[in-house]
Length: 445
Image (tube, rainbow, N blue to C red; front, side):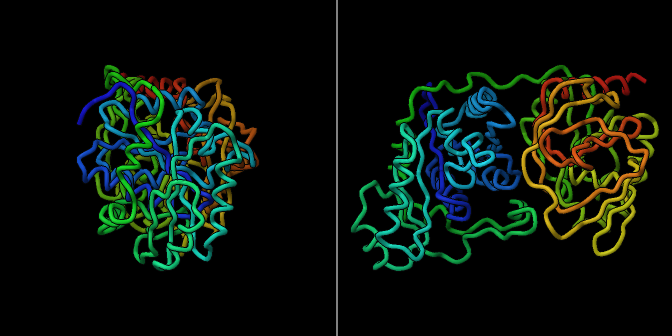
């Protein structure tokens, strides 16, 4: 493929959640990849799951673009850096195109479109509508001046007759008419869609998109995006000063690639391992991300990880965990029964069956263990179906001005050099440096 100085890019926006954005985005990514394009995928918002499906299709790591957590410059920087060497970028939107923070614009798909000067395809669910769908589309086209919607994908078309009725009143380019096709949807559960490694690839999605969508038009619209220089060099890793173990398996699978990259640039060598199956590797610190420990509680209880991480922590090794990782570090986790966990923190966790927190987090560091900055901001998001009940002497390293945290805005439960939070943080440079420096100090001892 020819390399050009400005990356062609297109956003797959939607009229609302559930209209088919993910199906269309995955299908376009697959169709372009089948044609030989090097596709760089992105996901607007904080979601961990959709990017795993993008990455599996494109064989390039999908990145999040979230204007709340990253800021506008952060969105640009990640987009440029990740797009280096790609032929085209495909960006899956979030919720409805104009749905942002607190009913406003911030962190919406439209916000990211403006930041990147990117055109969009609008996906609309045409089920149960014919002429009325054009009133809906017209509203999106006229709601905000300057937004470039290059065409519409009409999803869930019921029959050839249904398509004819829609086509009769159409005034905007129709990029595709996708028929109702059983089996395209990805299985869901309490935290959203199943991860890519848990599902079989959707057979024929790329072919379906080629048959029912104008992929040439998609490429043309993406190529009309104005000049925006792509990243010119590969990101540089810092000289490794410490080894950080990354808990990564079916139980712990929620990580932002930008966070891992920032740790490497800050001087960490990352060592992935499975808490369920592997021995604890020779490392100087441990990072346990979110995921589904409640689905693997029996395996975690019977693994050697519980005792090994407890011993490492008692020796002073820094341990940092988020959400599912927090549950794993409590004394117990109650699901179908009560399971023993690592016991690094003075608290017990239990699954509730209903969502306990969903939304962005914004707070300040108060200090705490060596891996925590003494001050500065922490930005991220919460999404969990569990509660953590702390002992009366519990200590917290973070106070939230937005978000629930562990206990009424108190966040970042810590004991010794172990710290865990419900917040899935988008790392700031200060935190990454503190974490690596703490690991390096432990290494020297």
